[in-house]
Image (cartoon, rainbow, N blue to C red; front, side, top):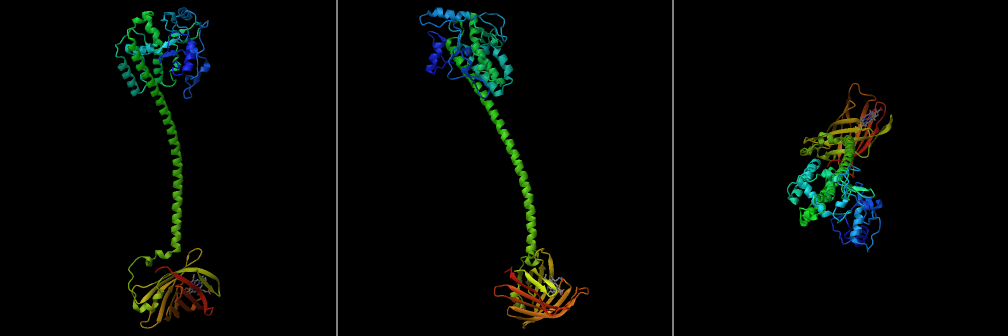
Length: 482
Ligand code: HEM
């Protein structure tokens, strides 16, 4: 199109085309062959050729420069004489027909007026020739686009079919200039309008091409008599501009559709990539989950070992019966106790050792205390010595009986006195299983004391068949229940 909004460049163009008394309109087009290759750039997205905004036409077949004083008619005749238009000639190149340009009106031979060509598109549509071609191509076009195309053309034209009009198949007719350069005879290459990939765009491009090539076709029957044109100039302008807008909207629809498709593809790739990352993360989470599960199991196990009393019946919440007053002097012994620090064990016959111990001393309303002592290895947490039994008080006295059964096969009764918060007892009778390990214990003494810091302290001494009375155990406990 002529650069109507760029006055400086418009002047350069007008000088170059050397036409007198002629004003270009927005429907005026100049053939791309008048521009050097450098005047074009390629559109990045589809390599489509675009005229640079600074381009000025320089290639013209004029043999002499136009002189301001030359006769206008003479000048035009000379120019026109360089173009041979030979109706009916066989195609010279690319299957294109050679036409005699001298049969044109003298309006132009290199500048094409858009309005008439646009009208021709409308006209071709009415005649059915575009419709035939269109239907073929429209099969490739999406339904909404096809419908829009059909609706617009019918609405804009409002004309009857004229089957004698040429079909779009003829739109490949070309103009051969004297210098033998060949273009579409409208002077506008199909490439200028046709994006290379889309079937719809090819179709739209052919409409453009056909539109610009139609001037000659329309004027041929009248042999230059423009008054014989069956359409008024207003009709031509209205239908042409409408069709032109339609074609442009079809193009922009195609481009935006293609752009959207490429965006969708791009987004789809991103989604697939994210899905892959998500899958990896899920696998990691699953692995972490199983690790957490294993760690939790281990922790549970450790907690059980650390706090074995939690599994015992005594730890369960049940209503505690009222303390029997008989055993009230021993009430300071009640509770669950844990060694703190670990107990010390020694004896002349063995290496000193340490142990953990959990003690439960309770009552069930009876005139006695129930007890259990459960020792564990400090490192392995394996159970060691265990004993359980009862502590009784002779009513109305401070005399205490301590009855114990031990996992070593020893059963014993110790008796003594409770004084304040201290209980001292000594073995009264000892029995054992027949296969008890030797050396057998012959005497046992114990002391329980509640210290001022709230800790319970126990000391055990014993005499065996080999050793006199000697301390075997010493341990303090902290209370772990109220
Ligand atoms: C009143 C309760 C206990 C009595 C009567 C008792 C008695 C004995 C006797 C007679 C021996 C053998 C001593 C020797 O070989 O000369 C012994 C050894 C031992 N006792 Fe005790 N004991 C008692 C409590 C405990 C407790 C609570 C532990 C803590 C874990 C313990 C740990 C040991 C150990 C490690 C040995 C040495 C290894 C063994 O012979 O098994 N004893 N005890």
